[in-house]
Image 1: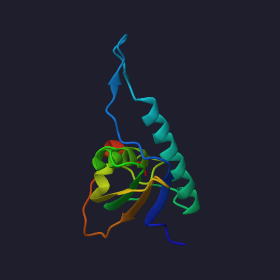
Image 2: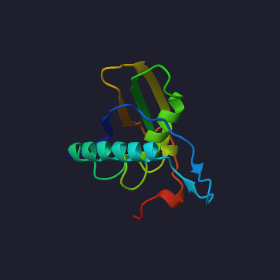
Image 3: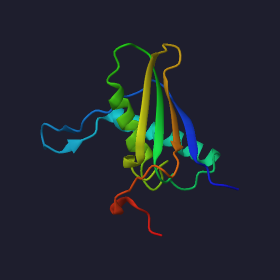
Length: 143
């Protein structure tokens, strides 16, 4: 059986855009807003289920194309780049769909209005060998 070269999954519920880290007024410590933390955990759970279903046991390698179809429940929801950022961050790493977001050489994002079923549909595919991508050594898994 050949290894999967793509993965697709849906994150149900209203999409949450990436928000920069905040600082607490009392201590000055940086923190991630609760809504963003909860949404990241939801995206990670959706990804993990689909990785099991697709039998993707390790991150995709090489150059990738990522397509996002963002179905928002209202018109004013944030920049499409902020929706992409939160999905990219969750999908990278040793347990993610890919090792590092530097592998994404083509990012296609569409935003739609869908008050009935807000969600994000994510497609990640490997590209051919003609695309040269080097993942930083600190992000590579040991051989």
